[in-house]
Image 1 (cartoon, rainbow, N blue to C red):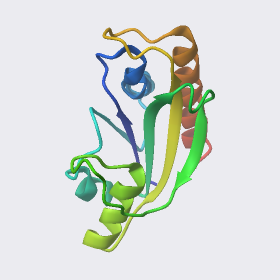
Image 2 (cartoon, rainbow, N blue to C red):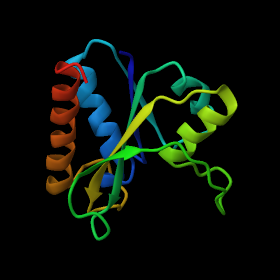
Image 3 (cartoon, one colour):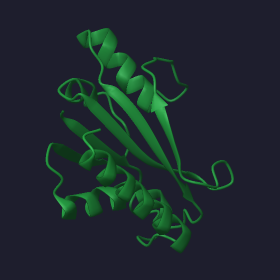
Length: 146
């Protein structure tokens, strides 16, 4: 099984860099069969890339007020127009892959609570703890064969 993990957000805005943090920790683990990608945001150029994988795991920060705990959800392919044309969700990426290439991998989204979005490159303690939990879950999931 080929797996792609996409960690995205702005690493210059403290907790918004949680996706990048997860990618860095996973790089250190060198998990077999897992490709890693860090990005500022989800872009249309990812659509063709995801079609080469069986499973795509998206990792992003979410405002702690909205999501106070780390969440893990299945992503269903879907496409929706957005007010900002360059904004894509994980469902959009998979939905466009399905429409444009006739296939979409399975997808999951990990959302990590973000408490501090000020300028800087340091995760808050609570966000770092949740990000490390995501790393453990992905490591364990890959180790068990998915």
